[in-house]
Image (cartoon, rainbow, N blue to C red; front, top):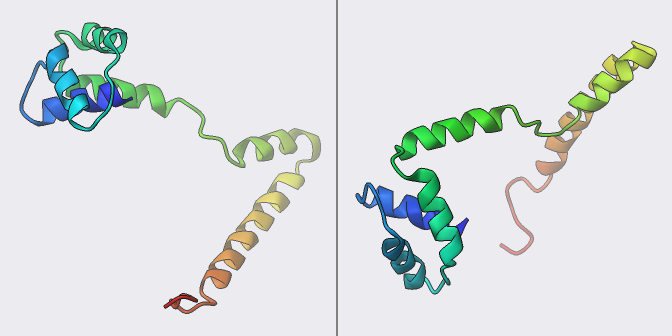
Length: 113
């Protein structure tokens, strides 16, 4: 991740095609060690590509990744009992309302203010 961050910082700084020395300079300026294998792998993967297109393609791939949550539970409960899924969703909504009320108990004041 730090190599990718260094690459993005170099691109944002105006260097359209950073080299390994640029990335090593950025990483060493913050005290991080540069792994030559990671740098060469990254540079080979992004060579000749526009970084905005690479990011857009990554976002499309991440859009299809399930993010977890209660959706799978409701889907799994629906075939076995039909009415169980709406009841579970209703209980979940009630829990969310209760959480809001609890957070307002301190009225914006902290114990240590």
